Length: 111
Image (cartoon, rainbow, N blue to C red; front, side, top):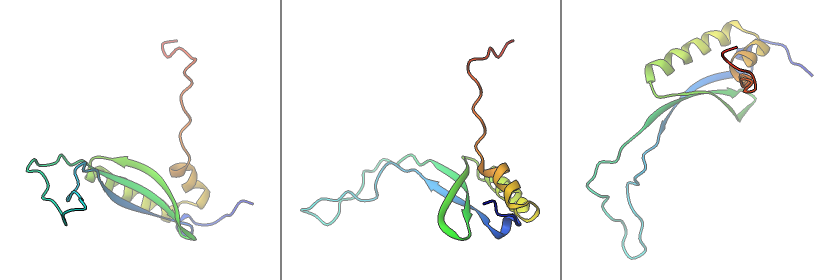
């Protein structure tokens, strides 16, 4: 059954900061409470994930995209929020949640 309605009645979008630091703050050992981390500054990688969340099930999260530039991620988030207000549920899902078809690798791109 296909449900018809405004996209903002079914979805919301959010921006999540993903921090992928390899080093732990503390190294756990059984014989001591904690150990000071090494003096070397860990290299930190920061990414921004744009996600669509279903309003009737907050555990249903669909990744719209992952970007390294915060300004670009915020611009996409703002555009997605505007589209939520203007699009129907089906239009929003087609535009943001349907994966793009993979290019056919059998065809010669120079032909």
